[in-house]
Length: 349
Image 1: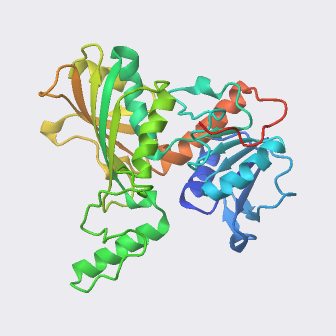
Image 2: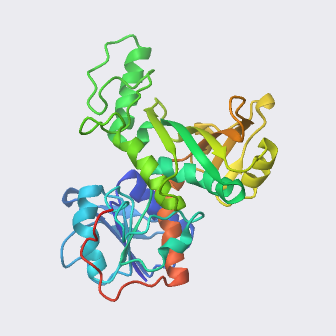
Image 3: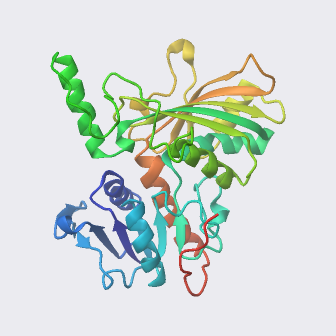
C-alpha cells in the first residue's frame, strides 16, 4: 500500500499524517507532497521515521494506491484526476469535487455505502456540514426530518494559519491598547468581534458560498435533494472548533430525552448535556477530539415536533483530516470498486 498526502505541510495535511500513524494505517510507503518551496523538507513521523516532502510532477504521481488531498481547490482540480488516472483512489478535502454527480460525498458514519462505484475520486464534505450531518442522520433515521435551520460560529483555523496569526496579533493589540492594523485575511477585525460572513458573496447572492455549500452538501449526503434547509454562517474569534445551533423539525414526534439517548448511541458523537451543571459542548473541549459533541438538546416551544441542538466539533480533525483517513480505511477494508478506466472530470451537478 503506497499512500500520498498532498498538502502535507498544512494544518489538515499534518493532522492526516498524524492520524495515519496513530491509527496504524497499513501503508508500506507514505509520501508527503507540498509546494515547490517545501520540497526537500523533512517531516518527523515518529519512531525515528522521517518523511521527505516532494513537489508534484507528472512522474511523481505514478504508483500510488491512495492519495489524500488537502491542498486547495486549484490543486485538487488539476492533480486529483492525474493521481486517479495513474491508479490511485483520491480522497479530496477541497470543495472542488463535492457536487459532481459521479463523485461520492461521504461521511464515514453516515453514508459509507456511497463509496461503492466511485470513479477514482471521493470527496470529503465541508467541516461545518460534516459535524451537522453526524447529528442529523440518526434523527432522520428515527423520526424523519421536515426542515433544518442552522447558525454556525466558526473558528479562524478554518481559514488557515494566517487567519490564526491575524487573530492573535489583533488580540494582543487590543489588550495592550494599541492600534489594530488593517485586516488582511478577513474584511473586518476578527478579534473581539463576530463576522456574519464565512467565505464570499457571489453574483448578487444574499447567501455566502459557505452557506450554499452547507445546504447543498447536506442534501447530497443525506440523499434528500428537496430537504428545506437554511444556513447562516459566522466567523468568531476562536482558534479551533466550530460551533453550531441547529433547529430541526421532525416528521414524527421525538422527545428531547429520546434524542439524547439516540445521539449518545450514534457513532462519532458524544452527548454532553447537563446545563444545570454548566456541562455543554465547548470549542475548547472539542479541540483534539475525534467525536463531535452534542448538547443543549431541548424542545422548541414555538413549534411542534421541533428540537434545538448545540453541536461542536474540531474542524481540523473530524471536520477534515479524520474523515479522510476513515474513508481511506473503508476503501482498503471494502476494496471499493471503481471504473476500469478513471474518467476525465465528471459532469457537474
